[in-house]
Structures are given as C-alpha cells and as structure tokens.
Length: 266
Image 1 (cartoon, rainbow, N blue to C red):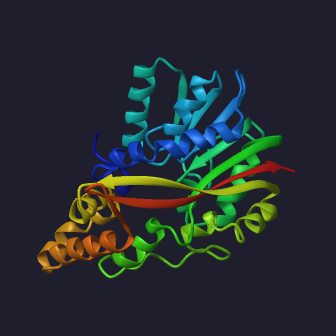
Image 2 (tube, rainbow, N blue to C red):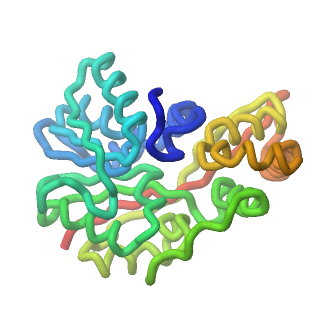
C-alpha cells in the first residue's frame, strides 16, 4: 500500500480484513441485496462487503477514511471485474446524499467512529425510507474487545469520547444498540451473535499476527522499543492468546464473537 493517512493504513491490516471476510458475507446476505439496488458500505476498508454487494449487481459505493485501503479495494474490484465507486470520507460526515441507499452496510467499521450518535445519524440519513442498515461489530465480551484492555497498558490513552458515546463494542451490545439506532431514526429488527475464528500454530504466532495487523500499535513501536516494552507487549499478547484461545489438532483457534444487526430506517 502507499503512504497511509491514518493508522488503519499502517502495518498489514489487509491480512486481518481477509480473515474477517466471512462476516462480510453474512452481512451482505442479511441485507438481502438484489440487482440494481443502491448500496453504501461505510468504513469499507479493503472493500470486503462492497465487493460482495457489487457482485450481486448492486450500484455500490464504498467510503473510508484511509486512501491506501481504498486503493487496495479498487485493485480488488478491478481483479474481480465489478464496478464500485470508492470515496474517501468520514463515517461521521458521509459524502453521500440523503436517502441515496437502499441498503447501508458497515462491517467492523462504523463502530470505531468516536462520535456514536453522529455516526448513527449518518447511517440513517443516507438510507432511503424503509432502507436496511446492516452492521457487524465486536461484542463487549469478544476477544477483540478484551485485547483492548491488554493494549491499554502500552498505548497512550485515547481522547475522551464525545457526549453520548462509549467504547466501540457498544455497537455490538444487543442491549445498547437498539437505543443508539432509535435515537437516530432506525428500528432494530434482528440481531444475532456469530464468530470469526482465526487459526494459528500457537499463541506466539497469534500475538505476532495481532500486532502486525494493528496499525495503531505499530505507530508506537519506536516508543515501546526505546522504553524496553516492545517484547513485554508481545509476551502479554501471547499470554492473552493462550488464555482466550482453544487448543485442538495441534492448532490454536482464537474465536472472535460479533453481533450482526439489521435495522430499518423508520
């Protein structure tokens, strides 16, 4: 990839995006996208959900903050022979017209927008009346949410969240999400938990993968190395993977739980 604009473009995040592709397949299926419909994939990343929607014949737009990821998504679209419009933009202020989508998707994307109410309002604003909104987000008890507690000992604290916001896993909380969407003008119609399973030779390989695909961690590598804490981070994430992982057949599986939610603009 080219020089990143954000930490999402640092490191090898596309490897993680590839591992998370099954969640995009479920999200696109849940959205019941049909030929000719208009679809907006918010925080599209490398384009997993957008490409699947386009393959169904949808007129698809993928929006993301990180131009390096959009460039990779565009190359993937060319290779797959599908047509997607790629737009650089913030999920809290989408560069998309009002009511311009029959289906709005966000797979492990909008959950990371700091201003939750603003992001929810944007999802609803771009959806046509009666349009579907399909989201995948890590649950509060997911391994990905728990990993944040490990990293917190090594990374600078994030800025305080805006009013009425909270942790990213709020989007994966079946109790919290209905209210967040209702305040924005959407009604939750279905939600269910699923897993993405990452398989590794052992816990140390898992820790290495988690670090190399986390741009926000790699952004602080020099500081952690100079303070003698880089190896400690590896060790703590190895212990984390050992604790959260499931051993079997000579492999370690790390099960990542997420909530798949479907809502309708009211």
